[in-house]
Image (cartoon, rainbow, N blue to C red; front, side):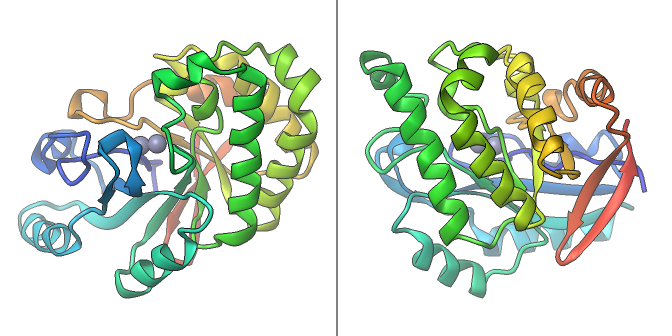
Length: 260
Ligand SMILES: [Zn+2]
Ligand SMILES: [Zn+2]
């Protein structure tokens, strides 16, 4: 098996209009969209954003009849403490092959909102990492921790500042990721648009030193032009740390693949 993109969005997400067919122009052997599940989402007027499962099932049924691709069902789950039961109830009724865990918001604001610029950056980062650690203790139904630096994207942190102020928090988070046998995602938006490759250069060896072995690449594409974006560059980053394989998740199975 070749590695395939394990983080991308379609029109089933509140913030994407893309259609499956445009992604499929790349002729992938496996294809999985991971649309947003974010309850009480400040990024969308506090709506409960839940990808339409019936529409997804119907669409994948149609596509499977017309493409040689193997289609999987995926979802990117944003979790705010207190929402776990509702999310678990939903996931129990709606099975997925691939589940990403993300921290996007705290019930009041999204960590990418302008409001974070009006607050102390260390307080915001502490709040964000504490939420991530808490959710890793209370929500178990995910295979990959996405974009660990999402909550820092508006705040301008250096790797030195992370090491100095948040090594304890990050070590705790990474230990929980390892305990749960989850993978750490290298995210193309972090790497490219937000220029945070150096934050990964700090976190990857920290994760490795604690025993972490599982890595994934995700484009986080919201349009087909960004499918598998920056995969060679992100693979190059992993090679800097002698990491030679990636992990793909399909339900309870894990597949190891070479770096692209
Ligand atoms: Zn996300
Ligand atoms: Zn995403």
